[in-house]
Length: 323
Image 1 (cartoon, rainbow, N blue to C red):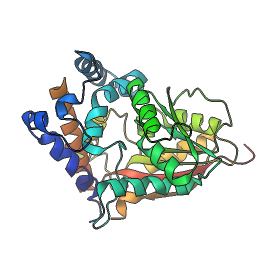
Image 2: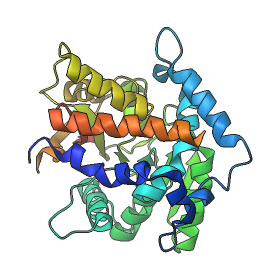
Image 3: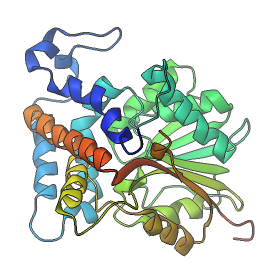
Image 4: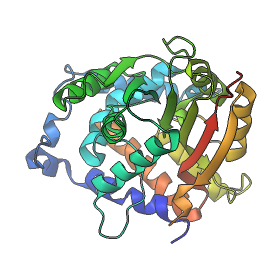
């Protein structure tokens, strides 16, 4: 089973994306809307406009704009947030699934693990870096009894996240604001702990986002991050390896995917002490949007089979007490 997790984890999402469009028009699953309702919150033409912005950025000549353009990331999430939520749930990340364990249970367990790692508890506040629609934030707050402040660059996700928190009776303890995690609108030494779940991979330079987390953490605070990384098996001279990683980057609006060595160097450069790390994956126009996400699925499956990519390398670091 080693090295196959990424290929297995995206199968359910791939099946949903591959269903014919007509199937979506009549499909409804519990409290989820039919597919034609997914983009009902957008004005006419908004999805196409977001796609055009994203596609122009990601295919521009010269240096890939994913390295420098936070607005492009927001365009990406304008067009994929509802797809992700429909097919994957309110938590946009991977997780191991144990025998006879449901997808929702595996996702929740994965989130509770990071809450336990950072030591969130009643009376403490965690920063969720790149929180999406807030699925993990709500689960982590419920599990730990602590408070969670989320930040996402996408305005659409902010509205959804805060509405979900209100519906769950968590509005007093879970709140999301819009902002760039490279320049966060928070005071220094504000948060007790922090976490990121498959989010900092969008940063053009890890030092930028890690530096902001370091600044806003209280001295002694722990930051844990699930990172998308290449594995030690990745060979930059192997064309198959390179193409698999490029497909993942394209389909997920990413700058070049890093290695653990890159993460460790960036963390230490801004002042963090790296406490531990583990690759947890080793333990075991809407048509245009559709095609882009299928490329992402192909890349994730291929990268997983080749064992050159992991979506869940957990890195735990601490801001020194004397910082």
